[in-house]
Length: 275
Length: 260
Ligand SMILES: Nc1ncnc2c1ncn2[C@@H]1O[C@H](COP(=O)(O)OP(=O)(O)OP(=O)(O)O)[C@@H](O)[C@H]1O
Ligand SMILES: [Mg+2]
Image (cartoon, rainbow over all chains, first blue to last red; front, side, top):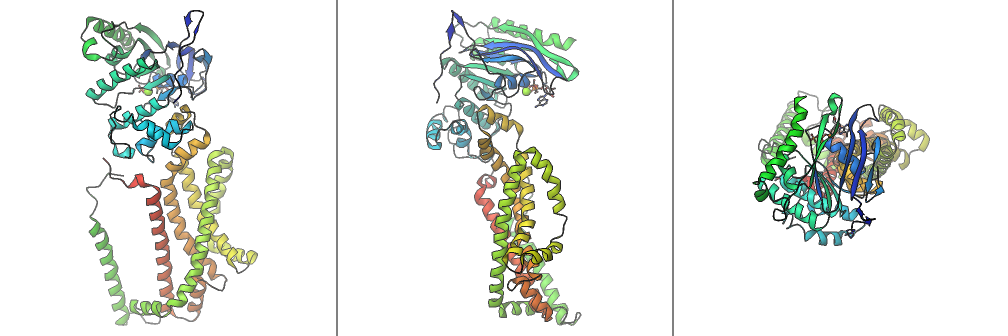
């Protein structure tokens, strides 16, 4: 596993782990613009959420952040360095679980390690220790077709984790999990991401989830399919007191602060509906 | 894969029903010939065919050996050529555009029509037979592999790229396994072509092989032996197909697990 780097600090200012500068995104070279003016950043140890209605371009933005696509305009900086259009340095969990049907679960989750040149044996040994932790105990030798949707999602989670980058992009990572597991996995993720000083960008449909997890929420607005490019309608910083660690729904979601944050997000989203 | 399991007929029924059908057909055939509805010199009865098969068993075995050698050699080279062609077509768009129509057109040329040419060019030995089989077997393999490679979810390839995978890694880890399913259906077709192709090429010249034997018994109007060799040929094709199935089971263990 690669060592996680410390955030570089220059002249007192913190350089974000990942930063997007004024991205303009299109799938067809500019004929239809999906999103424009997308600027966001995330620091190590932070989780930011992107919320927006279906089809507004959340996945499109994440693709650009991962380096899989080149934005029409703008830059993606990784620890201050220009990484626009260069995949391979940011962990990305796509919207589907994308397990390879011809590989056993253990081989699926070890794929990032094997690609980086770790021997299969070493990779297996390392990953095996994490199976219990990810609620996957006993599934090592099974094929993906033998797992339930939620289990497959966890396997995808473990695989993303094993990509080992300290920046992770997650596209609706909890959507295929049942409500109870979702709460568990969510708080587990927040805890892990913070303790490893990871920077995460998480897409979600669920406003509660965003308010629960995020240090900052980017609310997206626009209907690219109707010719209205998506922009960032607002940015909400979520302050929690220490006792209510992020991801801990049961405590935080009962506070008036939670409701007020949720209100803010909903207002920004609904604004869009009215037009 | 796991759908329809409830409505599938039981294993015994799957075997019993076709077996009974064949048995009934054989009995009817035997009766038709014995009762003289069809002149016996035109149509031998099943028992006559079996006895011809038994009497000639040694001769047939030696001829079959030649045919099998040609078929397996041709199939092996055909698969190798098909594989290389498919990989190149998948890797280079230009090659795909250039050869896709050519390959399709080449398949409309009937095997029987080019066989005499091959004999003319390459003589009566092993070469023209193997070449003919290569020409007929590489196509199903190449086509099924190309479409198999293309069946991979583009998101899967994106995911591999975020892991920093090279093109070769994407190929071996994702594309190749994804293409196996279609590859084996292509291979199954190729396997049947291989035996039939060998026989056809032997008709047109040669000293050994089931096709040569067939030509000889036809010329001597020994229809019982003719039928015997036809049955042998289809048995060999079936056997080769079964071998392909077996190979598929070994190569694709994930396809044969019980779903959750
Ligand atoms: N691979 C692609 N090629 C071309 N167009 C695409 C592609 N992916 C998305 N789009 C288009 O970009 C727009 C935004 O889609 P995107 O998938 O980013 O939305 P989303 O916010 O992730 O939606 P959802 O919440 O339903 O996942 C849509 O109009 C869609 O048609
Ligand atoms: Mg999406």
